Length: 184
Image (cartoon, rainbow, N blue to C red; front, side, top):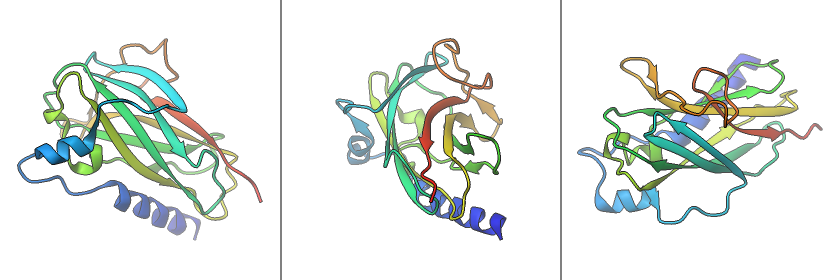
C-alpha cells in the first residue's frame, strides 16, 4: 500500500513536471517563457557550477513547509555560462532527510520541455519549475531535494566544479533545499 501511494505521488509529480518537448526546438515565444531577464528574490541561493557551463543560481520552494499529503512548487534558476552540446535532463531526487523512506524521482526536461539545454544561450537565465509531493501518512520530518544534470543516453552527469562551495553528495548531486515537514 505504501509503495502504491508513493508511486501514485511520483506519477502525479512527473505528470506536472514533464511536458513533451516542442518539435523543432523552442520558438522565440517559448524561449521568452523559459528565460528571465532578472532573477527574483530567492529564498535559497546556490552558486553550484556544473562544468563551467551552467550555474545553479538558486531556487524557491512554495510552500516552504509541507504536511503529509501536500505538494510544493519548486522554481530553480540556471545561469548559462557556455553552450551545452547534449540535451540534459534535470534530475531531482526527493529523499527523507533521515533516510527512512524511498527516494522520489522527479527527473524532467528543463523548462517544462519547451527549451532543451542544447538551445540554451550563454548569458541567459533559464527558469525551471516542477512539483514535489509528500505521500499521505509520511513520517518524514524533513525532505532533502537533490538536483543536477543527467544525460540519459550515456548515463553521464554534468560534474560539479565547486564541490567545496556548495552542499553536495560527492556525485554531482547538489542539495537544493531541505523542506521541513509538519507532523500531525
